[in-house]
Image 1 (cartoon, rainbow, N blue to C red):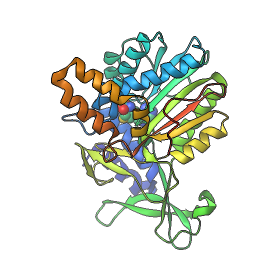
Image 2: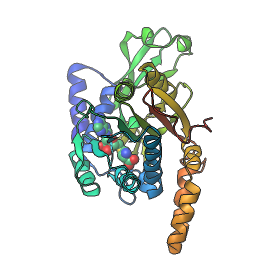
Image 3: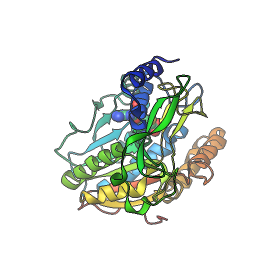
Image 4: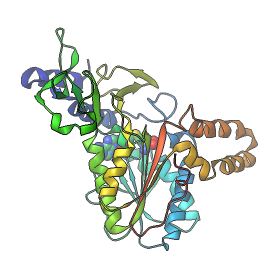
Length: 352
Ligand code: SAH
């Protein structure tokens, strides 16, 4: 049993069940501090920037395009939340610099281990623990890929007589089990869901909402644009989406706390509502496939294949992985935000 599992057991045994959100937050903090999770062989999961340089390059071009149409303001800051190995930041900044956009690079990252990888990929970045100390003297060009899904979710379950928070307790043999909390939480459930049948689970992420609020607030005041890319849905849904992944395989959420990546679907409808409420522009939410197609991934893939014919097959299979509906194209969404006086963003016109 891992040290973290032992810590959770002691904590629960002495003070009672902990919330699922607490369990997820501690597990992931531990996980990202210890592991080198992202990439190909030997890693736990792979993300779009690690699939192909095309991903970061097209994001860089999107940022250049909106920045230019906003009048090329300076100074301007690139901000990335949870940059992993720094691959997206590296690919995007290469393209931006070529187009005359050389923003200061700010990376928000809590894991010391990943900070080292990021510095190796993009020298001269400024690291931040959270958003509070990001600069305020100019617009932000902000990107967050597979960041929100790692933030803790809270689940509420309909027990038959009331809504209760989902807690983590100990079963007869000391195993982790889910159980409803003691306090009725009906007031935390939207009216539309209140009469859902027993067993219904509603997942919310106050942590995601807090991040999107903070970003939207800054865009409203400082200007700039933001892209949140993640797997999730654009309509409100019920049910648990929490999952654990290790070595590219799913396992039980309680099987290996701190040693597997825990993530949950992002509720993009709610994130758009949260952002709009801060007075920033919601440019739209598109599927990753539609968005990358609108940005010209086909042309970029063809150019890469032409310049290195021996790589053509792998370029085309990477393109498919990013945009095919049965791969990342449909499940992943891109949500664009911008300051109130900023222009429309490319790729959101075909929003479904
Ligand atoms: N964007 C990268 C990595 C995604 S994994 C990619 O696409 O490859 C999630 C990233 O968010 C990791 O870098 C992790 O260390 C970071 N992270 C997770 N929780 C965080 C938090 N609360 N604050 C800051 N960074 C966090």
